[in-house]
Amino acid sequence: MASALAAELLPEHEAREHLLEVEEEKENGATEVKFQIRDLTKELENGDQILKGVSVDIPKGMIVGIIGPSGSGKSTLLRALNRLWEPPSGSVLLDGRDICNLDVLTLRRKVGMLFQLPVLFEGTVADNIRYGPQLSGKKLSEHEVHRLLALSDLDSSFYSKMGSELSVGQAQRVALARTLANKPEVNL
Ligand SMILES: Nc1ncnc2c1ncn2[C@@H]1O[C@H](COP(=O)(O)OP(=O)(O)OP(=O)(O)O)[C@@H](O)[C@H]1O
Ligand SMILES: [Mg+2]
Image (cartoon, rainbow, N blue to C red; front, side, top):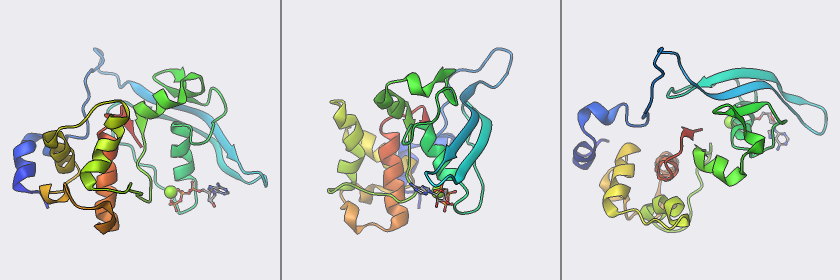
């Protein structure tokens, strides 16, 4: 699916690593922890425990996958990381700071989330990609939108397509471009 435009916008050597930009490396080569999750528990009103004391470090600059059966709590765990539900205080730390003490909008700007089911706004693909930056008064140029499309492996013909005329997979890629447009530090 990679188009000539994608090749032009993304040099070959960047093509595989473009989603990961690790700016700083610790001198001693140790991996920096981005998210610390400590004994995270989620209980439903009926007493069912969805998450039972999850503890894990998510390193900076790495792609981490969570594998488990359907309904086992993967999305529930991710939703705690940008406070779509409120984790117990002290159980999720971002860069060493309890996320419960951060302004929730600031947190969500740093920690973007790609939902399992993509929901696009009305309008074109370009409208969707421009949406986030526009909220903070920035209008993405045509070139920037094309670059985000290329990063999400969509060719330039998608720019002016309506969100409603896409396949689920294509909509998922537009949702990825829309999330990347906000330059999150972490993409869930
Ligand atoms: N708002 C809710 N109210 C009640 N139960 C919920 C709620 N959200 C999730 N659950 C239950 O919590 C469990 C974990 O759900 P979750 O969405 O985290 O699973 P998952 O691992 O992401 O599954 P999948 O692989 O199918 O996406 C499921 O059994 C689900 O029924
Ligand atoms: Mg899920």
